[in-house]
Image 1 (cartoon, rainbow, N blue to C red):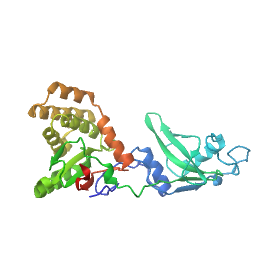
Image 2: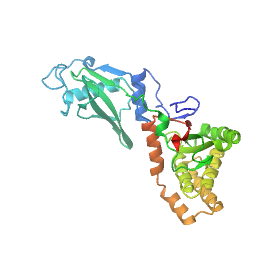
Image 3: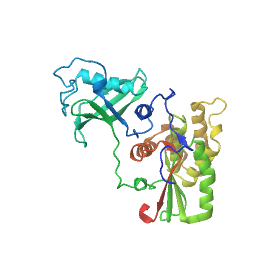
Image 4: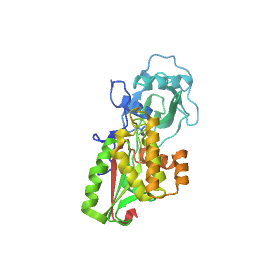
Amino acid sequence: MGGNRGAADGCTAPNPSSPRKSGPPREIIERMLVGVSSLRCLALVVSLAAMGCHAQTATQASASAPIQVGVKLSPEMTRRIDLMIRSRSDIPPEYTIAVAEPVKSDFPGYDQITITFSADGKPAKTIQFLLSADGKTLAQFNKFDLTEDPKDKVSAAGRPARGGPPNAPVVIVGFDDLECPYCARMNAELFPAVLDRYKNQVRVVYRDLPLDELHPWAKHAAIDANCLGAATTDGYWNYVDYVHAHADDMAGPEKTAAKAFQTLDKIALDEGLRQKVNQPELVACLLKQDDKVVKASVDQAENGLRLDSTPVLFVKIGRAHV
């Protein structure tokens, strides 16, 4: 039950709709553009020198001219990088590519450049590349610290929990999307069975990972759940259980996000009444839709843990998690 990314049997952030024509170089750009997670492939190493016939100049665009840290790349070099990236991926034509000045990298013979992809009406995305000192090779690598244990980055602190006490021998932290059918199945089957068998020996905590591109009302549901959770643990879990069990009904006959938002807010308000929470405070929280808590959880999941699917579980054994 570890944190494996992209599990085939879970809700996974979508790939672009265009069919694939090539291997990893194409995939890593496309996955970055849908804004789900950091790049995860190691294989984008291409030769810039092969991109057509161009007159050599005395600028950095020349294949023999060294790339210099802190010195802006020439228009010719920038154009060659742009062409190479577009030729190796299906970047929509409306996206523009901006290349930053090289900075020192951890890899001998290569400097690091930040490339920004942007389009009107869409958030800009950045990715780090390596550019060889001779300007002939563009590469993209991910570096991983093998001394780190992913579960050590996952905290259960401050979250509503069910099952055992904070010092329970086993703590399961799940990254959950309230619109994900696989999360709903896990919530309805796995955890009730685990808690029924192990009682107070297991503590269960959910963290937020709404997949916005796939599930339009998931983030709203997470915010509403957190509004309840700030006042009542029982109310939080009752809300989570109900939404997971009735996810198909949230958007009503209209099947719109707006209708789902109304339904979710009403469920939260009704649960707040049952739990006798402060109604003005709950209403204010639901209206504000402050997503700071959700964003912090998503940022850790995507950038710190490189998750792009739900559900993902981290099992923490012993008292180190307290």
